[in-house]
Length: 176
Image (cartoon, rainbow, N blue to C red; front, side, top):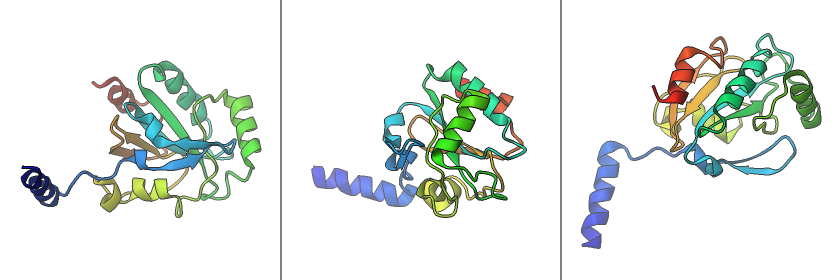
């Protein structure tokens, strides 16, 4: 019976393409250098954002923090990944980034160590359909947003111009 069940599951996986890996497979470091296991976010909707302190979109930190404060107790979290990939708009150290975000925008959502988009395993997963199971996309600038469901599965990519408190995002968070 176990062999039949295993064979059936394997056949279904092959036929339907299997369940793509979830973001919960990754472990990253916080700005403070602490380990952060994304599996700890199981059961929460997640917005992943690549951030920068010297960008025209930097004021989005205010909206990000507002959305986080409103929904953090409703199984939602924002994860910021600073990057210096676009016109060197995040040149600071981890402590510089933390100080800037806290002092200027009161950021309390989790912020990770600065990454390079092209080499970050999390961003490779976010950008590639063969890994995320949904779509190929490109991070064209700072403050791109990625929506991840409670099971760690990729839902949608939104560009820099979409504000964190956009109606589409709020409806998704609220499950409407």
